[in-house]
Length: 99
Image (cartoon, rainbow, N blue to C red; front, side, top):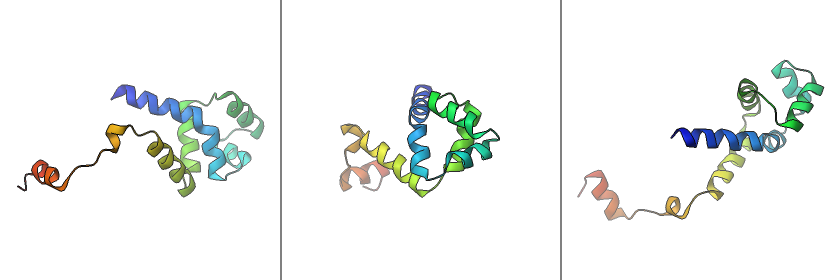
């Protein structure tokens, strides 16, 4: 479980620039919300050097339907074959104790 959390955060850090672009918000707007100058924001963005607290604030600012759709698509494309398997109605009944 801990490994999954770290992996998810790592993916978030690696994709933050794309998420910012997808969100439609301008860099100067996000910088203002973070309380930093646009030039500092630009440097941090290009280096990928946002702190954990800054990442959290960025995600709060850019949280919109476009970002959620992008993240959902990203999750769906990364599903393993095992994750994609479906359950039959009969198996679901057994699992739920309905049979």
